[in-house]
Length: 339
Length: 240
Image (cartoon, rainbow over all chains, first blue to last red; front, side, top):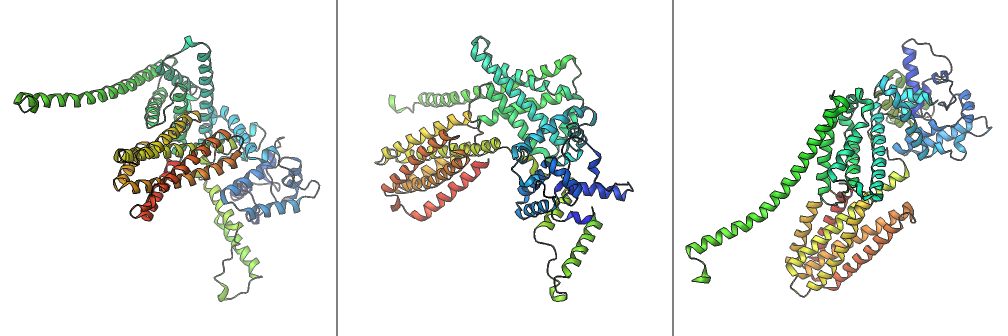
């Protein structure tokens, strides 16, 4: 394999691998004639390289999901069908004709978008246990992929690196929270006696969600640091947004005007501050954090009450002022009715 | 990797030189093949530099269900904004022209818009859609538009109705096409609702024309300006 492989016909992953091999060569690391990835003899799918006939034969026996993933990524990013056709053509021509390469057969599940999504989720899920040792980094993803039998190079599917792991974990927790809240709502439906106030529901939901972070509390500050980076802001806000939406929806909010935003904004502030408090909480079972959270929620409640009172006062104020003016006019004697 | 690219370029130049005629007249010809190389070089660059793919975060919604949700989200959000705006426009018009002869006509159209708005307000929590953040803005802008055009006269008010309803009808039609594309059976309820509302809006459009909208001062200019404003509002509400 040489530099010519970098031309058209190479997938994203093969280019990454080429880069690593080149780097390896320059550093004086002896590389064998067969590609790097063949060292990992798992039962899982291996990466393929179009120009290597040996790999082609392996390719026909194992699903070509990696190649197709990258083809799909390229297609989506650049919408170049020419590239695809060149790839397909070279695949077909290079294969020794026994099965014509998996690409030309009917799509396997992994070739579909859903299939690719599933694989991504599986790899990230498998990577989570490694976070304690390797942190929220690419290395965890590599370990996760290898634990499933895929090549470590599968981390190329996650260009964002560690932050994708953080997002996955966040979404997984949100989903768990939603399921739990739905279940609770059903229980309340079946047994009206369990009905609780809105603030109670919200505080329980926030506590439940924060408890899901306890598992990774030692490295959670690193995850928050990743989220604080400007490149990841959109994702972070999106995650937070869906979290507060879930909590409010299950607490009974059905509004459809600007209050939708104010309510969620306030809850996001409470959640975020409680999360930060939790980072440095050393008390037993995080009792300090729950107390902090209850104080913040009662603040919000008080603010809402205050706004309503001010509104009422303003309406009354105009009536009071009018009454004052009429009284003044009466006193001076300028009221025409009694003259 | 610079060395790598350099040698590749040299290789390609050598290959192509055998095909292309040599000489200064041909020096301007771009030796890079049109499709593959430039993109693959960009990809290699991205991979070596380890830029977090900015689009990656947004592409997370790769599944069909998530894509459906995004489309329906947008549709309901913008329709709610539209009905809210229409409700306020008629409110403004009624405030000025309520006591004139077109009062009952406008009142009838307003009642129907109120119905539409209520339906979308019901759909927002049902589909867990985020309402547009510009709701307060559309509240004010709609009222101002309605009252403003009504002050120009009853024909101008009708012209405003015609303009707004024609934009909304086209918009509903394209939404119906999108929904049918996504799956007619899946979204049957929503399709039926939007169809009914589209028919109502077309009705309003025709009513406006029937009540001498075209006699309004500067009819073409007025309607074009209002149409442009509506289209901009629709575009913004879809996103924000």
